[in-house]
Length: 440
Ligand code: NAD
Image 1: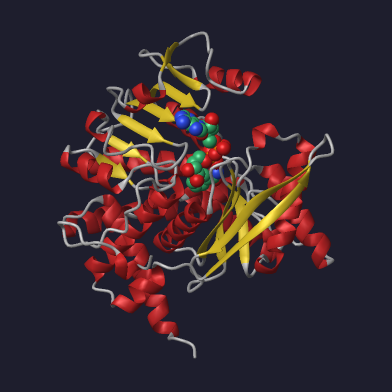
Image 2: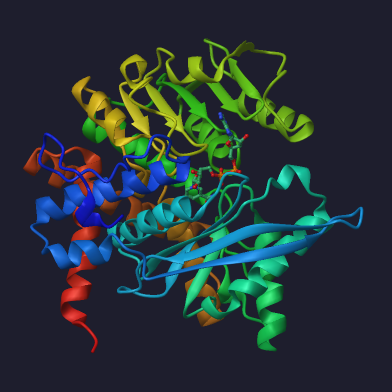
């Protein structure tokens, strides 16, 4: 299907929702990403050809990754790396290990990365990679073999000046260390700048580990005070979906800022304590048992109930497509801060906006990760290092500037924060295309 095949919705925007009956979660994510692009293109008056170009990834590579299991069996899993756009700099984006990941999902994530980097003003294009494995079912040695073989297969795309991966769902600092080592072994020299989110012993930046979550906190506090007019975050009630790298530290930092985190969930279950959870104790419990489920000082809750709690702020920080037309009418939070990429479908977005819910979109709310990744890469390429304090000041500046630009445009042109964020990101990429011209 090409973008010109998309049916037209009542609002006149071509909807990229595929018309076959059961799109995969990845196809839904890509349809959502293209819907936001179509809205922004219409708002900006982009010519059709440029819109079509931006709706299509620049390069996509799908690879088979053979993996030898501990019991001697040979299994083959599929991996992808998509570079959506390279007009503003090298490609940048996470690598996801998740059984449901597919080419469509990775393409959507790569597209969001393009707008995110442009929105916060860092010189990258967008990329994302994924391998369809469940890391929880692999031993550490199997995981290392999958990682190294996948990297070997996508090697022609990677490089500090070409495409720089980072952690995402199911990958972490150790994964980045294996990627850096595999790339460096092939290159014949150490290339720390080929990945970000590495351990500090290999050139990782101080402050990268919690950067996405600190960015979520900055965006949440800006929204509370600037957009919703609260005098302070003190006592703001919060529910967080997802207790991984982004969600657990977002919960911690929001609690540190004075919010009352009343509920959190992960794949294993959800817990609630109306008087406020002890997030540090909960993190210790999750580190020990692998899930928040079973935490003693809280009651159990269903995954669905968490999204519909009567709280001030909801932070989805797990996977895409979780707030849908089905549950959006029951979301009672007045502020949704998207730690995850693509957690809200376009239909749900419309319902939330109609109900007066403010949504701080993913490409703004979770940009702290790629901002500090950029700072890590700058330090690597200069063979220089900054203190955690210096990194924090730069993160805060870039996040607050981006929030201000989005909130101002939204107020000026009566847009949602998502529409304004996309308008700014897409326009900056379109401008780069116009100035560079078309080769040949
Ligand atoms: P992660 O793998 O560390 O954590 C994911 C969490 O989601 C886990 O706690 C998992 O148990 C939970 N989860 C899975 N299914 C769930 C369900 N149905 N209900 C509740 N929880 C569920 O991944 P992460 O790096 O924290 O990424 C989370 C989201 O944030 C993703 O959308 C990712 O793209 C986005 N993101 C991550 C970064 C980063 O720096 N890691 C940066 C920007 C955006």
